Amino acid sequence: MDIQLKRGLLDVCVLAAIKNEDSYGYKIIKDLQPCLALSESTLYTILKRLEAANMLTVRTVEHGGRLRKYYHITAAGLSRIEEFKAEWQEMLDIYQFVTKEDASHD
Amino acid sequence: MDIQLKRGLLDVCVLAAIKNEDSYGYKIIKDLQPCLALSESTLYTILKRLEAANMLTVRTVEHGGRLRKYYHITAAGLSRIEEFKAEWQEMLDIYQFVTKEDASHD
DNA sequence: TGAGTATACTTCGTGATACGATGTATACCG
DNA sequence: CGGTATACATCGTATCACGAAGTATACTCA
Image 1 (cartoon, rainbow over the protein chains, first blue to last red):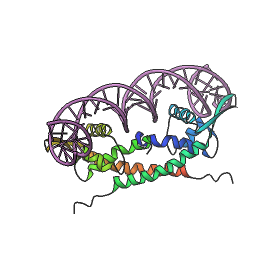
Image 2 (tube, each protein chain N blue to C red):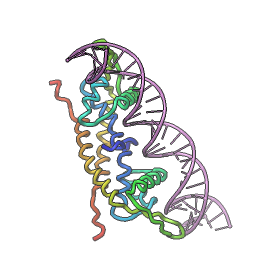
Image 3 (cartoon, protein in one colour):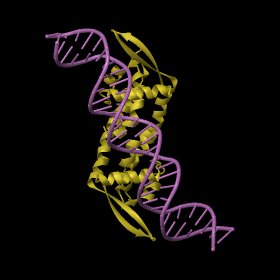
Image 4 (cartoon, rainbow over the protein chains, first blue to last red):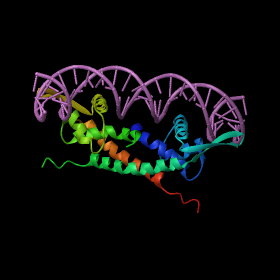
């Protein structure tokens, strides 16, 4: 997928990935893989950004000798997803505009 | 609309704006206004990028003492629009992923 | 006549951001 | 003991949207 098109989707996809169940970086990447590929550096950047925006909270858990950071979505994060749904309507309008055939030359 | 979401749409919207009839910068902005607001600096940046990518050609025409640059879409530009239609299918998958409700907790 | 507004294109600087490259560290498998 | 999977972090770079500011013409209205 075109990188520019991806940009607007990344944040919401990450939020959607933790929406129903807390998750951690590595797992989020695996879960999103079939839907939207993203690298580790990209993901961690996004997670930090979302945390700074209070859209998720972080909790560190020891797991098999390693530390895992579990991310939990907040009310603001859920709102962001709702906002995206509204924006999707605008996207549909734009899609219509882009794909409509011209009939004016008749 | 969220700026990140806009990014992936700008190029194709501009191409769509000249798809059926050659147009010029100022007019493109006015035509896109109801659908997608963009500033002059943004538009001209995009037009240059699309020209460099051979997605459109430019022709300067004198009009009322001023010069106007008319943009004409190329085959590559039309292909870009078709490509966008294909990407839209992926977008739909992502939209499904983001909006689907979790049923696993039953 | 002169100020304001619409038309029309251009350049510069800035901030946001995706991502490859690289690094650190543990566990497991052969 | 080397390779691979897991898991997180940082740095540098390239792309890009956009506000600000500039240049120039034409029309309107007082």
